[in-house]
Amino acid sequence: MQRDTIVALATPAGVSAIAVIRMSGPLSRQLFRHFVPNIEFSPKTLYHCKYLSREEKVLDDVLMVFFPAASSYTGEDAVEIYCHGNMLIVEKILADLCARGCKFAEPGEFTKLAFLNGKLDLCQAEAVADVIHATNERAIQVAQNQLSGSLSSKINAVSRDLLDVLARIEMEIDFSDDEIFDEKTFLREILHRIGAAAKELNALIESNKYHSVINNGISTVILGEPNAGKSSLFNFLLGEDRAIVSEIAGTTRDIISERMIIGSNVLKICDMAGLRDGTLGEIEKTGIVKAITRASNADFFLIVVNINSSTLPVIPNKIVNCLNDANALVVVNKIDLPKNCNVEDFLPHLDRIEISIKNETNPQPLKTKISEVISRNKTLNNDIDIVVNARHVDILGRANKYLEIVQSKLLQPLHIETIASDIRQSLEILGEITGTYDNERMLDLIFSNFCIGK
Image (cartoon, rainbow, N blue to C red; front, side, top):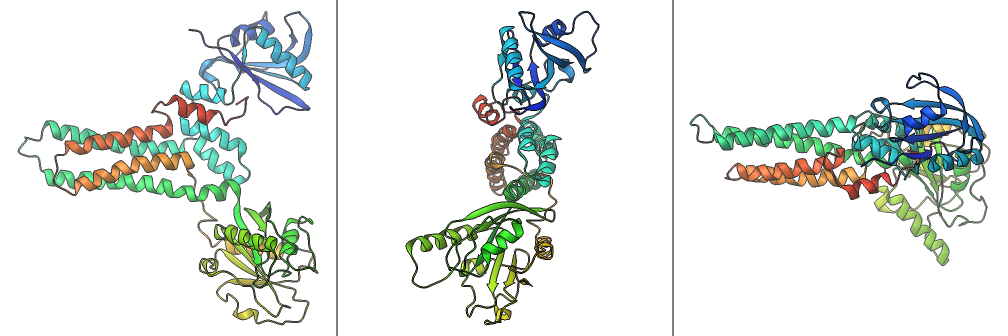
């Protein structure tokens, strides 16, 4: 049965200098030959030609390149057409190609073909989407590492070790009557190797805690009393008046967040309701509850203290207990006004910086101090090059459950053949990460999140 030839716009829709149309499948060579006739063409070489419709009407002046299956992205003969970036032209070319026997590609279908044809494994295919959607340099670096096969290499190495253990077990089952066989020594070796494999899988699971930080930015909250200058600090760092600033206490009721780059880090900073006790309106109470909930899950804290206030911020104990010199900075604000509180006794174990946000014009000293604190935090300032996603965590956890069963069995008197099936189960589950385990529904779900031309 002959496969379809698929086509799609591979560049964003809209007005641009150039648009790229991608084609993959058995009609690719024939159609390229139709548009570039009468010459002996070379693969992976650009050719200038007129795009003539089936009615012999010139649709555009284009460049075309042909990729044979062995060197194409999809593992099939493929063509790319470079036309002017006018959507009217693009739509006419796509309609003409479909009239010639092509069909519109589904989301992620080109990458799915690359996976099915062995050009990429499933980890690498997922990384294609991660590279496209990465929002900062660190996220791009991690995604490119995965695209180059870093996670696949780790999984394959663990799988090879487990396969070797399985082979040893099968061999000992066959030759267990041999008088030379020392079962205790053998089981001790197997336990060590299974433990090493489980440790590798656990280390990969642990890397998921960096996923949100790398892809979404460091979740940062600004805490303090009403009118301490939290919204002013937010605007100061952002460089624009994003949050409303008022002398009236309790102005900020909902959570406002923005991403910003500070040093080499991307921070997702949230300005929230001020924390205070007393008689409050229902809306402000709701804002404070939301602020505390968000702060409970934050990675980094900016705590604003108004030096002119007679009181210090009331920070809930569950938040205070997780503050340290690598995840929090006290910002002592309004130093142009008289000092009315003892700021030295407030969270003395944390770094602090004094500032008058209202009168300050240069945010760099504050940003430098924030970067300095973050640089101490191994979780936020990591150099890890493998970060697994939620799908991988689920698979790794299920695979590790079987290794835990094996370890438990090895500590009891048993017949060694009883652990072989558990190791096989772990291996089969690990295959879901790289795609050696075939599950059509799983593949459809993964590739449906891709863009059309990828």
